[in-house]
Image 1 (cartoon, helix red, strand yellow):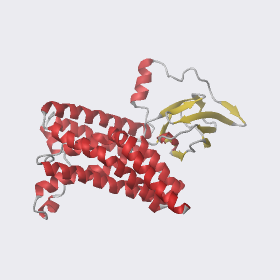
Image 2: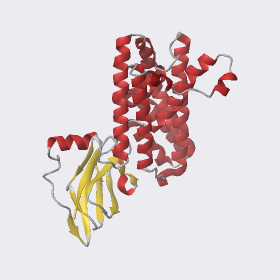
Image 3: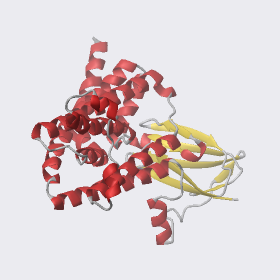
Image 4: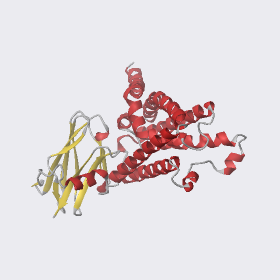
Length: 341
């Protein structure tokens, strides 16, 4: 009986989350890819084609996340995906969205050729090649949404990891994505109709470009780069928001720093560390439910799924001067230490 209750809980919680907050949250992050898919050549020429294109996008998205859930459940808490690798993938997605925006704005004829299409040999096997072309791009981009999960999706991924069961984890991701699908379908239908209007096409291109820039910025954060919007903003202000904090104290040969983790991000008690001295980093989670729980230090390829409430620790030794960035696994919540001699 307990086993059945746990199984029902693992189904209904993700489904209801997807139907409520998950749909809009994910669309805010992944809507750029859906808009890119619908802006492809051939999509939206006929009503049934545009509907099938959206469904193809959602189907491959559902498959991608179900497979991801299976892998997460199989690997359990031992999973350790490189933040830098994930950052590179996000940059790839962001560049594609920028190219799509350039094509919508008709900046240069060359951008018309930058559309994901099936191989010609594959098209020759199908009678209705124009429809195949229309469905191929949404299918590929729907699958690529797995590279840019939203914050609530990250929370579901953490839940999937915690099951340590491939089938349960796949079920969690399947029903969560299924729950988000109605919002994506309705927004997709509205977007296709509006894309026929030139003014809205410009607005859509701007939206896609912004999402592309944010994806690239998140990728830069995950790669540990100093070239991010947040860092440029601090430079323009001429002062870091953590400038009043001090240098970490050295206790028993180790620098000690504490980061408080909440659903809204991170707050450190110090902002400066010394190079060459080991660091003991204490992470205190205070009812953290967002992707902030998936904590990473890209420079040292460190990643850990934190407790929702509790204390976790990491240890590392700084090796170079400059800025050391820490971030959640999607580059949404960030912070940094200044490294000095």
